[in-house]
Length: 266
Length: 111
Image (cartoon, rainbow over all chains, first blue to last red; front, side):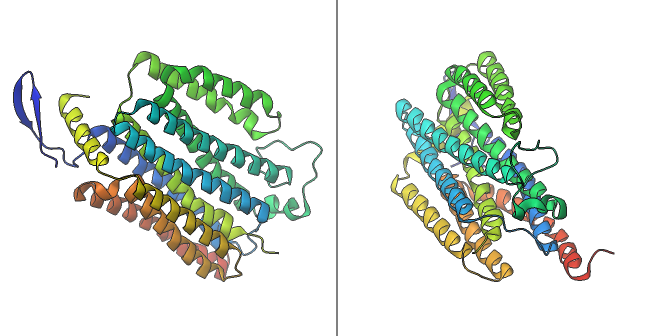
């Protein structure tokens, strides 16, 4: 399948076949994903190392947290289905369907980020925190977490590091899909989301400052869509899909390792 | 994209056109079902190492389904499949070198 004969300037010419039987953009994305999987691999190994070497590892996830994380997993899995349907629609040239499926994928991704943010906020309010996070005014740390951040600092450090990195990837994935689906029209939406996220979160929340990721992404996206405007074709949708499925894939390891292995059984 | 890249992209798109929608729904259903099993196991009072082994086994099955069907690797040329997966597994396996140290701390303590 790798042999490609291309007619150029009216002359049929056989070019050297692609080594991997696919186009270079897709190979580039695969190489990026391989390197990114080592980043997540290192974080997952760090978490597991701490889990093994610490006898009093906390088990803070009650049934409410597990329900929340299961719902988040369902959203991500559904987003992968809608993404693959977007890729399928794109190869048939159904522009409207592509946009619809991409927007559905973005909606599932956004739901995931909101639920995750809710989970983080609850844990921080209960006292599971990092030294860099400001204290939540009017909230006493619960008995359960009063000593965790002091006696087992590996837990909050690896938990927030790993899940925060994943949340960042999902957020950037939603923005990536937004650009592919809506192009320039997505920039004002993104700026609106940034303002909402920044102004609606209290100043002691890590998301108050984290929201600026949206502003940085809006600036980067503007540079890309204004300097190199183009109509995204099926290959662009497929490459964006690879990134999105990877984000889903990583969560398939985080969910059991972080949440299910630290379930509090009453 | 230049003409060669466009031609290859068209070939890849043609491959995609031959895949039915139904298989994606089957894979999605299987992934949800495995997640359900994992959550059920999370509430069983099992020995951590045994639980970890089962959960990671199930996660690997889920990863295989996502990479194979959703990321389309099952339908790529074998050179692409083997090179990407072997290099990834090798690099991740190399990271296991740190685990004996974690067990040492647990059983012997820090000296």
